[in-house]
Image 1 (cartoon, rainbow, N blue to C red):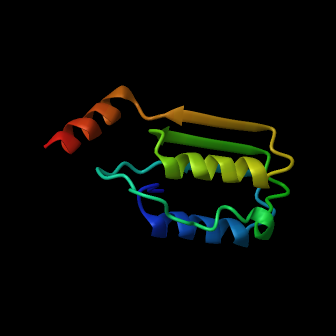
Image 2: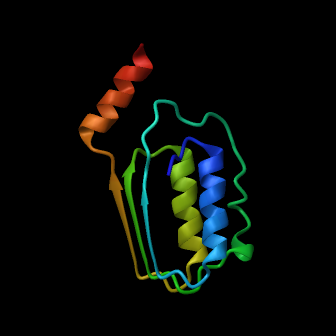
Length: 105
């Protein structure tokens, strides 16, 4: 999933709404060179339409801390009442440094 692409985020949440009995979720952040700039409303502020009442485990890897990533994490935490474990792993140092070098040029 690209947290830098509004369409990727909206598609992911459309899929989540289609599987309310989902018990485990793994998201791998797709690295792109540009981050979303400014506020983008993904509809994450209204989680009543998408309660994930069976979701117990979430694993998110490759994040770099951009706002959209944190919004998705916040949404998953607030819409998953039986969540037992969430694993959040950052991008590796090499992935982050490549992205920073690319932005400098």
